[in-house]
Image (cartoon, rainbow, N blue to C red; front, side, top):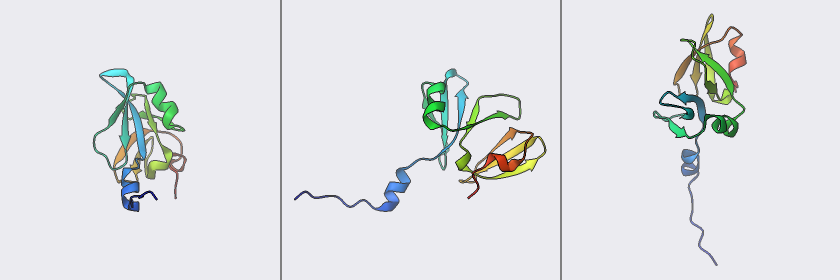
Amino acid sequence: MHHVPHIAPSNYFAARKTLRFLARDSKNPSAALVYWLGVTEPSCEPSFFDAVQKYGPLLQMVLTDERPGVFVKREAVHAVQDCGAVKRLVFKDQSSLDVRYEGPGRDLYGGE
């Protein structure tokens, strides 16, 4: 009989990461910076294109300074603060990201 170690459920969920958004790495535009819920510093993926495919489906957003290349995981958005053409995405970890979007804020979050 094999001994199977007990793994507490909290350890399992702590190890799971949920994507907030992807952005291009300004130092290496072919790479992606991967931002996770509850994690301050992003991780890096060598290929932006592959990362978009791997973590999709994602919403392509434009930053307030008109820079493109941010892809948001809709399910990670808790709420949207509507300020006209600028929307503040509030993520489930209470971090936020301002983006330009002319449509209704309800289009931008998974809403649970």
